[in-house]
Structures are given as C-alpha cells and as structure tokens.
Length: 203
Image (cartoon, rainbow, N blue to C red; front, side, top):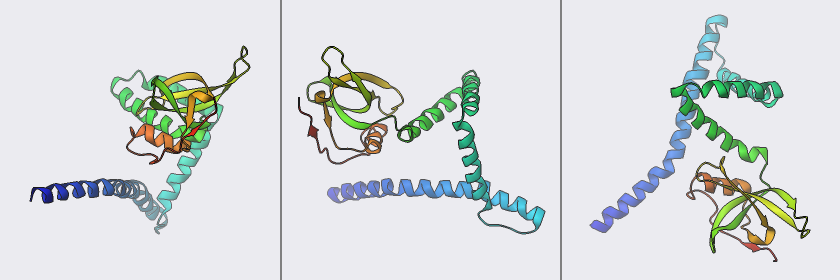
C-alpha cells in the first residue's frame, strides 16, 4: 500500500510539472485576450459599430514592434538609460524593475550572439567542470598561441560571472548549442542537454 501511495504521489507530481507550462501559456493568452484584445474590440465597436476579432492582439504586436525599433537605435538606448537611472532611485519600484531587467537581459543574450560556443572548463578543481561561453580570442604575444576568452556565468543569473583566459586545450567541447547551455545555466541544471558528447582538444 505504501509503495502504491509513493507511486501515485510521484506520477501526480510529474503530471503537475508537465501541466504547469501549458497552464501558464493558457493563462498568459487569456490575460492578453481579456485585457487587450477584448477591450480594444469593445472600443472599436463603440466607434464603428462593428467588432474585429484579433484587432487587439494585432495592435499589441504592432506596439511591441515599434517599441523594439525605437529601443534599438541610439536615442532609444539613451532614453532607456535615463529611465534606468530614474527607476534606481525609487525604493519599491527599484527591486521589481531590476528583476525584470535581469530577465530581459538574460533572454536577450542568445539574440545578441555574443557567445560563440559553449564549453566546459576545469575551473574550480580538477574534474569539476563548469559551463562557460567563448566570447572571442586573444593572442599571447610571448608564445604566439591563440587563447580563448571564456565567460563563466553565475547560476541562475547569467548576466554576471567571471572572465577567464584559457588555452583551447584547457576546455572541452560538449557539442551543445549556446541556447541549450544557457537553459542549463538559467534552470540550475533542471533543463538542458541530456548528453555530453565531449570532444577533447589536442594539447
């Protein structure tokens, strides 16, 4: 009986975990529909006497598009910088804004393509590997060797971390895409690749 209860608890919990992403997706879509699409349709109905389903979502996407364009140019970046400074001076809003900023910066990392590839680095002690991202190369003038600039992010916030300069032979290539390795860092290892197909570099 005890084994049956444990078995039941295990799979009920796994079922709950499987439904959480679906539930959050449905909840998000419902919120967007109720607070954006439905209200826009009601406003349009008052003026033209006709409802246009999906107009609110279309306007929402259009607003995101134009905001993305504005914030991508020099003037937009300056405006964001000023807004960052303003928010940092408001005690209660500061914390919420910083959390949102970190999430936004984290999601933007793969898009910026600042990471060339994911590697494993024998960093803390022998045979204890950490995930790192190659950001570029630098030449050692004395030896003539090309060294790697490797960023080692902190978990679960990859916007901070450490920069180390290593020989390529001091790293291992797990054959992971940058996005896969980033998911592992952000989730603390809960989400990510199941296999390390390590390719050792020649020393």
